[in-house]
Length: 260
Image (spheres, rainbow, N blue to C red):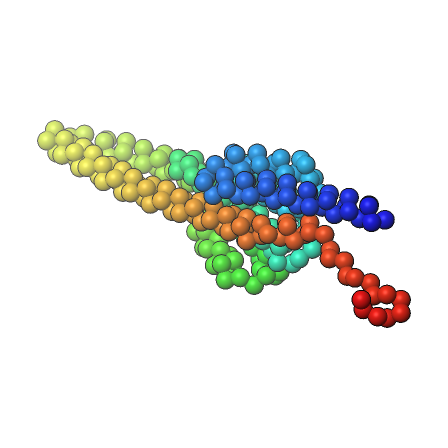
């Protein structure tokens, strides 16, 4: 019996050391921004220990960081911890990935996908709310408020369709203006064309400034998502060691009650 107990103890120690090593190397790569390498380490950990929720959780975060949103969601949605606060963190991570999907749907200024963005934002808000039910956290509350504002300011219809309608109306007006003003002298026509060109230049400059601000905002949000993931990885790295640590066996006193 003692022999088998010793074998089990050595197995648990080896299990913990190898899983911890792969996890730590993955975290190190993640912190350096090498998400592909982190994915390799976390993937290796999951291959070796497929029953480890910690390995599954870490790989899900890495998948999200490398842009594999669907795979990340599938991986994280299968993670179930015994502790409510850990499950709250899983929901939080899933929400961040869904929010990133919504941001990506709006990243193309010429052809933003409004319906996809709205769906992703609503999913993210729901996941944040579920996380909040399990763990009260001010950051989660802030994220819900931000998402609510994002959803509120989404246009009700595809802006491309509206732009086409506006362009058709503008073309009709331009044709009418040309017909009405065909007797105007060449100097005035040249002046009007110059003014139109100036206005277009101003509008283009304003659009460029807005695009730059939106790019900076998206970069800040992406940096926050990465910081959140690193925080989760570091905060719970020790949990894998605790879960795999063998229980301490208490000494059994002699039958006569004396404590030798």
